[in-house]
Every structure is written in structure tokens, then in C-alpha cells.
Length: 115
Image (cartoon, rainbow, N blue to C red; front, side):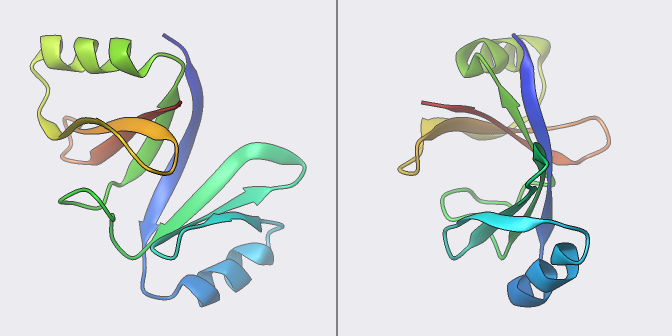
């Protein structure tokens, strides 16, 4: 299993202001579902920040997202480790398969793979 990217998720009700602020650092909007907006660097597209009001299909808002190349293997590893699965593995309508897991410091990590 390999990590493809890591994205911090910022919970905010100020999406427009956040877009303007991070735009000053060169970030541009690359995705916007209304409840989550992802900004990326045009020169390094994997350098991203997501701003979200809440999560559309999960009970909590994750602190960060980790995209992996084999989501099913990642889920199996986390379950076998005894880590707390906060949101079960599921396919989402926007083209990802994901689950949430809590890290040892209490942070919620959205682990995902694109379908």
C-alpha cells in the first residue's frame, strides 16, 4: 500500500474568505461540492488544503485525509490493528471509497482511494 497524498481538512464556515486567504499563497480551487472545497497549488497539484463546513455522509468532520492506492488493504490493516473505526468503509457518490479512523492523539483521519 502506498500513500498518494495527504490533505489537511480545515473546518470552517468561512469558505469564501479561506479561498481568498490561501489564494494569496498561490492556491486555486480545484473541487467544490458546496460542503467541501479543495484548493491546490498549480505548480505542485498534490499540495492541497480542503475547507469544509461538515462532512456530508459521515458523523464527524475529519482532521485530515490520506489517499492510498489500495483502500481495502488500508481498511484491513486498520481493523486488524484494533484502531477505532469512526466511519465504516463505503463508496461515495463523488467517486471515492473511504473510511475514517481515529489516530492515537484523537484526530480523525479520512482514508480514501479513488474508484
